[in-house]
Length: 364
Ligand code: TTP
Ligand code: CA
Image 1 (cartoon, protein in one colour):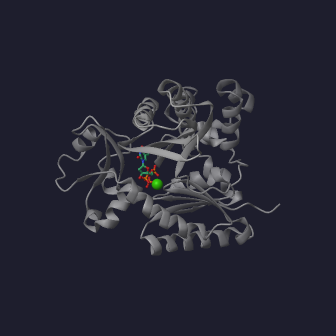
Image 2 (tube, helix red, strand yellow):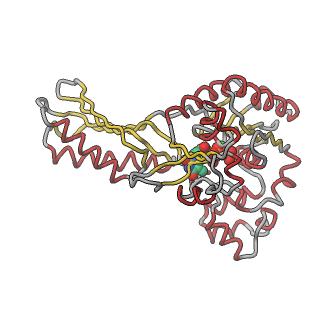
Image 3 (cartoon, helix red, strand yellow):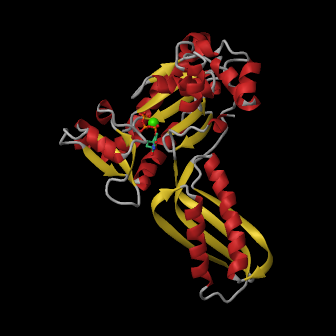
């Protein structure tokens, strides 16, 4: 079989770059985009920062207070709240451009996608590198965004490659270069391996991917379980057979059930609604998604629909908050309820991806 050719595309310092787009004056200043929490003041965390702010040590996930300390002496530093709707708009436009370059397009998140381009490049990596450069230019033309591309034979190596040189990078790792590319990298660069796993390896005296290869698959399996162990064993060797699977952006998650009996009893409906919330919550956790809008739906005994929804102040992934809001909507919806409810549904929308919290289970 010919080589597969896979791109991983990642938009540079995404939220902060979007802010620079609509306010070019920001380009020369340190910019941090903040997720303020409900507690008010400076409580909350940094979503991302432009590369100027990163020079001062400002990073995603850092408390806003720490970031302000780091930038204390820089009077022109700018701290902005998130505007997810705006970032999604920019993302959609750029993704529309990117799709045109793919045989198969897989949406991963607002600032990330995989493309299978095996067919149109015929497995030729010179062509692939050229195509990736064209893609970057096209994104810049259509959306003014800079992005980084990793080009290799599978999703895993392409993702590591796109992380290798940022921003505005293009890293090509041909099949014969995979081993020499991966060997010197820290084990942590394998997607899904976080701080804790890294520490386990450091204690074993293993720092680089090349050193990780000294462990056989049985040792890894007994330490981490068969799935994760095998994943690590293959990842260290640049092996990943996961296909690029066609996927578009999910705009909402919803669940609906037909009730055991038609009802307008709050307790009965509440019990079912809580189960639906738990169900939906477990899928969004798997996908590392947070949501800002919650809705409930009744299909009534005459098959007509009734919906109620609420937009939260801040996006969340919290199950209690989901349940609390859904139950409140249920109470409101039942206030003037005449008909019995036959089917009951819940949905969450205005989604965002919590990135940077790569959950290893996502990589199987
Ligand atoms: P990343 O791709 O991890 O980071 P980035 O695009 O800001 O920077 P770069 O790729 O140049 O290193 O995340 C994409 C967006 O997701 C980011 O702009 C903001 C958001 N995000 C959070 O809200 N919280 C986080 O902890 C992380 C890591 C990202
Ligand atoms: Ca990014």
